Amino acid sequence: MIVLDAGQVRELFPMKDAIRSNKDAFLLHSKGETEVPVRISFGVKENSTSQFMPAYVKSYVNRVGIKVVSTFPGNAAKGEPVVTAQVLLLDPEDGKVVAMMNGTEITRIRTGAISGAATDILARADAKIGALFGTGGQAAGQLEAMLTVRKFEEVRIYDVLEDRILAFIERMREMAGRFGVRLVAAKSSDDAIDGADVITTATVSKTPTFRGALVRSGAHVNGVGSYTPDARELDFDLIDRARVFVDNREAVFSEAGDLIIPVREGKYSFDRVAGELGEVLSEKISGRESPEQVTVMKTVGYAVLDVVAAWNIYNKAVERGVGMKIDN
Image 1 (cartoon, rainbow, N blue to C red):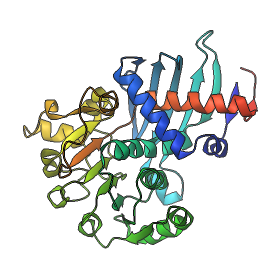
Image 2 (cartoon, helix red, strand yellow; image 1 turned 120 degrees about the horizontal axis):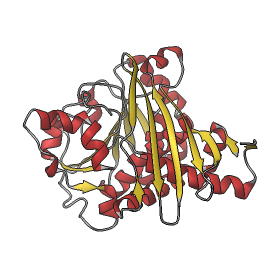
Image 3 (cartoon, rainbow, N blue to C red; image 1 turned 30 degrees about the horizontal axis):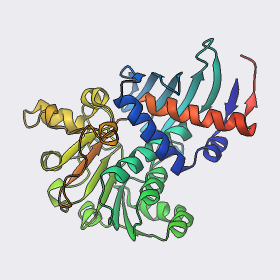
């Protein structure tokens, strides 16, 4: 078995590769080449959860894997990651664990890459203005993914904790220079989305982060942060007016309050969701249908993404001789 730390995962799994890996995972899932139960989730303490996310990916990947992930919002006050995880990858021949790798870093990269893939698939090609809600552990990956797939001139950064906005912009200075983009501190949520072509939310908020009625025509929105039935970052006005896509129907329909809450209130129905990203990639359904259409992608993440990512990382690690080898 090889063990890979966060730095090795970053080295082996750049964002472009992660976006490609996620697209492969979406396609495999849409073709029925996966077995992925809804994650097992435990409320450990108030607002904190630990989850177990297994999957079997068939076809050319042919791997079983599991991610153990915990989300503890209180960690932010201690300067520690809100989301921490480990991923195990198994050999399909004998069932032994062949790799354990830093799942916190995989989660950060592949979650950003979900928005990157969705933006690449659904956003207008001429998108120039972006907005990012949240400056926590997921924010850097979300920003990098957006910048990887579209040539943005400006991205507005907003967080309810104002002092974190400028600190995040300073941390992202090198990335902004590399992509040639201006990062701007938004004064309010309205300011952040004013004229924005792509909006990404990656917060732990339980209530909508901006007013959907103010989103410009033709915009694309990635809803990333909320992952429980009682929490939503996107309001009903946005969901009602948009062509909505998900990464995984079963997971989103059982976990995402962004859709569950309006369904529960009788304002919305799941059959209004256009479909999964993998179905767009396989051309089973259309994606964006007009330049003026508002599109939304809601994700709660699912283990197929982690297993395909781990498979790609493991193959590179073996090829390059990277990782600490231990007996199992």
